[in-house]
Length: 455
Image (cartoon, rainbow, N blue to C red):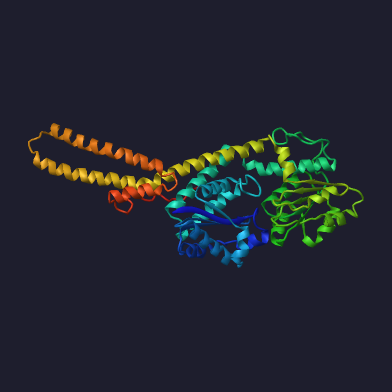
């Protein structure tokens, strides 16, 4: 049996497909029931957010598990598996553990370091427990992941990474607009205080109203933007951002006109293709009277056509630009620190998992040996009735030491070999050779599955 992740996210699928793949809380119990009823899936957890839908599972076989989960996703999306497959990713065992640990720390989010995902993972795990989808294997995995996520957010400043990326992008935009005189080289440590807010009086067009878009609106407002216009495929989300941060909502069809009026365009959608191309930008430049226009593209993949840089008076700041600006800054340091934490935690989890996998065999072997020794000592006692208590203790001790020494090497070695390819076969060999019972002894049964709560 092994761990498996099959899913799609903002890096592999357009927003429209992510919406089709979304699993609502009301639908989660049935989805989990259908999945665990499949031939190859024993346990399952569904993580569904605006930027990802992922199925975590303990499966009997790799290929069978992938097929069962992919079929379920295909039914949810209403799309043939052949068409859906190009957007799916699959992670197995160690990579599955590493993926979940990275997700819960915010390293795999559209906005690096965002902490909302920690609560979303906790909610997905709770829903699986309540629906009976999560057993010992996934409970151990998700409890470990939630602990790792809390460590990342409490021991580093990863929470501030996303906000810092947006803030640096806006400061670089202000430089291009001529508000700030020079590029801020270390805005995350001790930022210089400009004579006026970086976007004082600026008109900002925001394309996309997800978590990144909302943060961009908030940051732009604090930077002094006087007017914020929001365009989004889903009007309800745009309305929420407008209410939270002040602004008005426009249709995506109005983009050419709004580009003509804007000073700064910030885009952060989950679209698979370009949202603003060179032709649309050129049309918007016609009525600007030569005013500079800056695009801040926070999306992956890109929303803004790189070709807009060729147009007079247009500047484009994208993720690559921001990575250069942030190189060596605290954000980069915190991201690397969290990656190191994740790597260490993954290694520790896998070591514990390997030990746990052979523990039932080791305990069963020890229990079998104790039973045999006990029975033989009982028979020996009846044959040697004249031994005093001290002599009898020495006999018992000698017999038990011999058995312990004989079992020491195979039990230690089987734990060491458990991590090697085909490691389970060594434990299986011990079970066959000593005719050990298949059931798990009570002393190594499933651990306490109480939900890990916020500390």
